[in-house]
Image (cartoon, rainbow, N blue to C red; front, side):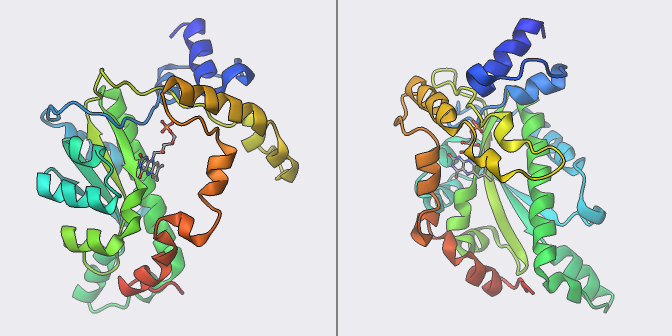
Length: 273
Ligand SMILES: Cc1cc2nc3c(=O)[nH]c(=O)nc-3n(C[C@H](O)[C@H](O)[C@H](O)COP(=O)(O)O)c2cc1C
């Protein structure tokens, strides 16, 4: 990509405050072009695409190589409808030809331990759930990078955590397995294109050497303006960023039912010691 391509990509991501002098290659260009896709053509994925995504996912690093994740590929219409219900009716969950459900999976190690009559008491600690969630997220994001390189698009569905027990029942998940998020995958509908969404300036997120709390008071107003302009271009409600972000954390009820997650995890067999 040319110098102009780099500048365009950085302006799309950061607006006027873009750092223009960054190292650049095709991989970085691809990453900066990321946009979440919520409108899909009905066409199926090409042969071998699912397996390519899983190979990319399995190529992600894994904490101690424990590989404490699994994924369920859902293509059945009725199952997608049920997942969409859990996600408060998100239409793309039904529209996408493929919905991946990424799992933090501590059951596999538990089963291997049982087979060998060896204890797996370490699985009952919060740390192990974090290992599973981090592993699943890294795997999923590798799949996202791979699918975008094929011209496909996707949207993560954290809203599956609105009701992890319903998801577990639908997909037959054993105890000690949590659906971390869903992931709708398909061909982007060119009639309803997605755009690159601006991010906070680097000066707000990049701490050099030591955490600097004053960065949180950085140019948030400028970012709100960039997000408002993005929302106007997408015909979305022009709410900016900071107000909407604060609304998402105002009270426990702002979490769409996910404030019950600890109790649900305990019922699903996770020890959170
Ligand atoms: C873990 C996770 C869960 C998400 N859950 C949802 C969701 O339930 N529904 C949705 O429309 N987008 C969801 N998203 C997409 C984010 O809204 C999106 O990534 C964010 O607004 C930034 O936009 P961009 O990905 O286009 O840059 C999720 C993203 C992540 C990382």
